[in-house]
Amino acid sequence: MKRGLRSRLAKYGDDEFSLFLRRGFLKGAGYDDEALSKPIVGILSTASDFNPCHRTAPQLAEAVKQGVLAAGALPFVFPTISLQESFAFPSSMLWRNLMAMDVEAMCASLPMDAVVLIGGCDKTIPAELMGAISADLPAIVLPVGPMLAGRFEGTQLGACTDCRRLWASFRAGSISEKDLNRAHDQLMPTAGTCMVMGTASTMATIAETLGFTLPGAAVAPAVSSERMRIATATGRRAAEMAKTDGPRPSELLTKQSLRNAAVVLQAISGSTNAIVHLAAIAGRAGLKFDLQELDVVGREVPVLVNLKPAGTQFAEDFHAGGGVPALWRRLRDKLDLSAKSVSGETLGEVVKRWPGYVDDEVIRPLNRPVVEGVAIAILTGNLAPQGAAIKLSAATPSLTSHEGPAVVFTSLEDLSKRIDDPSLNVMPESVLVLQNAGPIGAPGMPEAGALPIPKKLGSKGVKDMVRISDARMSGTAFGTVVLHVSPEAAAGGPLALVKDGDRIRLDAKSRKLDLLVEDAELNKRRTAWKPPVKPARGYERLYIEHVSQADSGCDFDFLVKNQT
Ligand code: FES
Image (cartoon, rainbow, N blue to C red; front, side, top):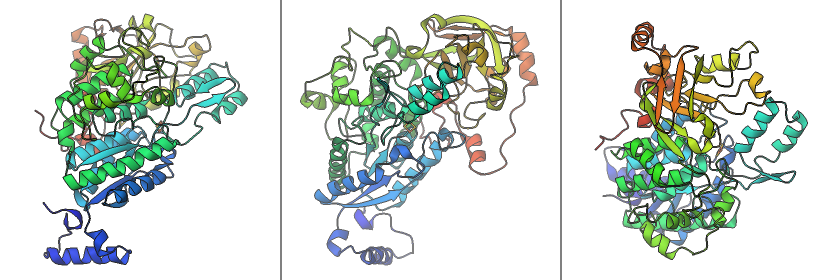
């Protein structure tokens, strides 16, 4: 196989001429013959002024470069699409697959022998992994790292769990606009990703567990010197991988590493978004992320990592408390420690050499979990034949077994128009149902599943209600929220058939979600159902025609490898 600058030559019908041209342009940029003979490490930078979470990406890329050069390879930084949660309309999830295609295309097109993937904000690491796995180029993930916790009047604040808590308090009238604004200044106090166990921290922890980062790389703070040292070490390791042509993603992503990811996801009480991303990541390698296995694992693995929203601490505490390898040590009887890491070691070898210190308050022992019971459960029933997810560790226990009448919102627009209408016929025992917010319906499956509590109930002290949708929910959110209902309403799933007043029964203990309406009536409603009108053109048209349902990862059918 051709390596270095000789790889992936532009086609002019004369490879030596192609190389002559390529070398010429690089000589024009100041490189000499010796430099141009070295293996090449691509450094994918997701720096963007529209992505404040990745504000440190340029410095990290420089530190990676130092590592690559020190190890005798040649670094090239290149850009891809960058996605930040609050900047991507209508939802970053719509663009995750586009970013994954961009990553794959660049890995398949540019002359690199290995690639460093700098990512962090929620969709970026999943998209990078999906693209790199499809390209199957030696790849190593460098998370940008989490923000430090904020401080406000004696309490610590974490984005975005406390953004949601403060906003809900403001809506309920229990905090003034002035105080809200003062707290606002402290919610995102440094560069980096959200510092609770939201999707960013979850996916960085999962990437480390799947073996795609150096050990200890997931949650070192973005603004720490340690983060810079991790970046340099990542560059050095990438140079070695470029020279030895491995390990490749296909060597790291296996059934055993996916099961390890399920164990860790439950133990960290991670974001439910990880379920969708793991299904997509697995699909790129021709594997299946088994939702039923995730549910079984959840019954065996306690929540050990004490981070908000399920717990009380922040990502910096997780890192200082021992980090991800210390968690693996706690879980050693539940993990397959023969799984490999990009460091060249197995997880077991990392655990053996990792410092023995662990902060028991942050990474709890097995007999002192953060919350009793299961973190994430998978539901099925006549309302979700292909499954739905609920984060029990963020739910109100008394609501996880509940029957009530539906209050239905047919779209996100309908929701925002009517949720605070004083005449809305809603009671605390009602079940709020949102339709057409799934992968096809929204489109892009936004994080709208934690429907706001109607103002007329919130102002009376109601803090949680059962909410059901085909949308997702931020990993930083909380509540008794049933998500990812599959098939979604816009694909003709039973969720589309729910009407105001229908009784719905949630029984999380038996993992059931049922619409208590006679089959004959449902069949009548099904006959009257009409699919949504497709967008006329462009990426949205491609998305709607090819996206899979949540249980399969919302990837495009033509990007999934034939599953085994
Ligand atoms: Fe970027 Fe939370 S919005 S990590």
